[in-house]
Amino acid sequence: MIERQTDSAPGRRARLRAIVALTVFVALLVALFAGQPDNLYLWIKALHIIAVISWMAGLLYLPRLFIYHTDAPSGSVQSETFKTMERRLMKVIMNPAMMIAWVLGLYLAWSVYGFRGGWLHAKLLCVVLLTLVHVHFSRAVTSFQQDANRKSARYWRLMNEAPTLLMILIVILAVVKPF
Image 1 (cartoon, rainbow, N blue to C red):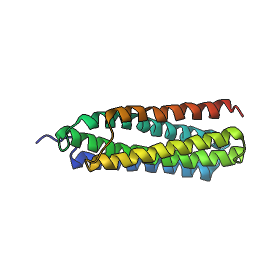
Image 2 (spheres, rainbow, N blue to C red):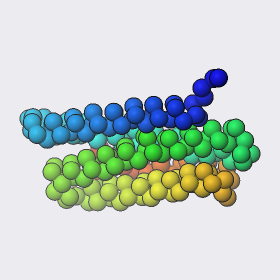
Image 3 (cartoon, rainbow, N blue to C red):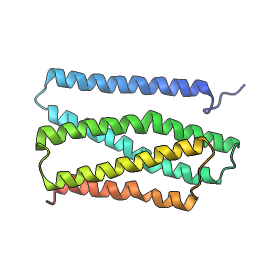
């Protein structure tokens, strides 16, 4: 019998690897905060950027899966494969990455900027909007899991642009700090 990636055993192994990776990440954070190195800010900033990149990768990839999933007949092997991919991407990568990005980002906003600055408020608004896109995608995953998607491939192509536009705004606000 050939083991497929949609079988439960590979899913359990992937979940275990994700738990180990998250545990290592959290242990690193705890060690950094406990040790209070002189360059703590740089470490936190680096880990924040890693979390943001992981989150953005999921936000950019998931709607592409939705586009292809809309063309797959309900109950087909292809549809079931997309369901597995979407569920694992959301639960194993996107949700943890989003939470880590938020926690570390809020820590940096508080410790470095004291939540002051028009650019910071605008950036936080964009991150809230990005989080709402994430929530919308999460609900879509649930909808696809139940074979209840009512959106077209064209809709998901347009929705694929939302994270990109918000990412561009967030990066410009964070780097240029225009106001």
